[in-house]
Image (cartoon, rainbow, N blue to C red; front, side, top):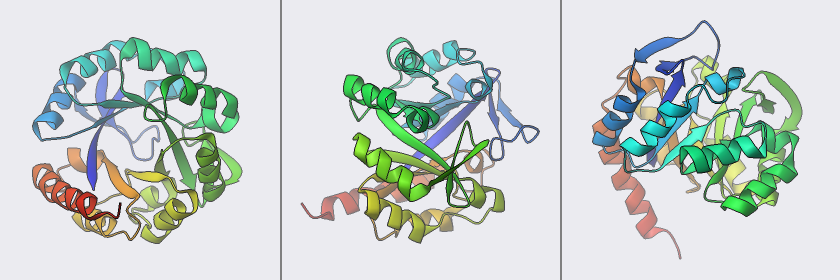
Length: 254
């Protein structure tokens, strides 16, 4: 299981929210670049940056911070933001230098633009992302419900040619009920896509359950608030998780 630490940024500060809801902010650092260096020191292999200001109509407010993070560390940085157009997505990949971007609402509302991003930059640099509430896709940063099921959206992502989806279950996060292993496994099997589980994990037992998921395409997890709150020692988690992850890769059928 690959552990991906998250750096949520708001007003140029490292700030965590509960399900992205206003009024639940918890401030952790004035310097997100130093936090990025910390996670790299703790042996992170990938870093997840979430631009919270982009969700509220300011897509470039944190550009300099994101650019500095990319330059400060020697591992891939992925960016989650509210990309509303091809140009905004291209700006992140080309001007900010992030390795890959997570695209959700734009993929739902304008699949041809999403497809062009994949064509121009490759499926390794474009990841589908999906917020789900009570089994249905929610767009616009988790604020606008749709009539599309999670499975239907996964199948659409597969048809568009991506390889991975970041999956965030808002219901389970708000209820603090942990990841639904069976549901994740079913979605991976039905779509053929790899799944990164976003911010559902509550503790080491949840992480262990994901590691034991019968579908090896559920292979990574983004951790945010639980790391900042020291729910468990991250260095130990990475050592154990990476050992199991490499063992599974070595024994995976060719």
